[in-house]
Image 1 (tube, rainbow, N blue to C red):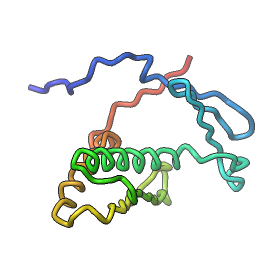
Image 2 (image 1 turned 180 degrees about the horizontal axis):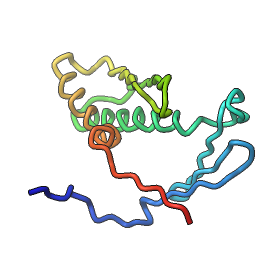
Image 3 (image 1 turned 135 degrees about the vertical axis):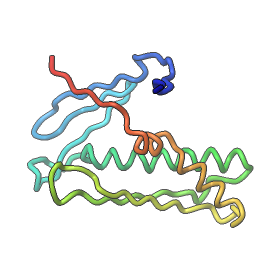
Image 4 (image 1 turned 90 degrees about the vertical axis):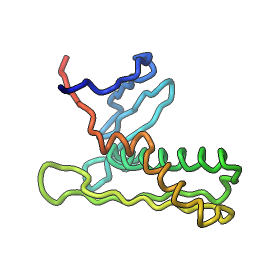
Length: 144
C-alpha cells in the first residue's frame, strides 16, 4: 500500500511567486515582496543584466547549504566568520536542456575541529533544496 508523501499545511500565499516580462529576455520575479531580476547572456539574446534562471537554481542550492551550515555552527557555538560556499555546474550537451552536475564546496571556519566536520557535512547535505533534488517534486505547468 502506497502512502501519500507528508505535506505541510502552509499558507499558500507564502509559497506563491510571480514572474513578469521586463524587456528583451529579462523578467522580474516577485517573491514575498522581494524583487529579483533574471536575464540571459548576450550570446543567448539577452543583455546579461542579471543571473539566468539556471544560475539562480544552482545558487539557491548553495545558499541553502550555507544557511544550514551557519545554523549548525551557531548551534554548536562556532562563529560563522570564514564560512563560504561556492557552486559550479555543468549543462547537458544533449536534449533536453538541463543541469547535469552541480559541485558545492564549503569553506569551513578554521575554529571548527576536524572531528565536527562529518556532522556538519551530514547536516548540510540535508538542506531543503538538496532534499528536493533527491525527492523530485511533482511539477505541473498550466496555461490560462
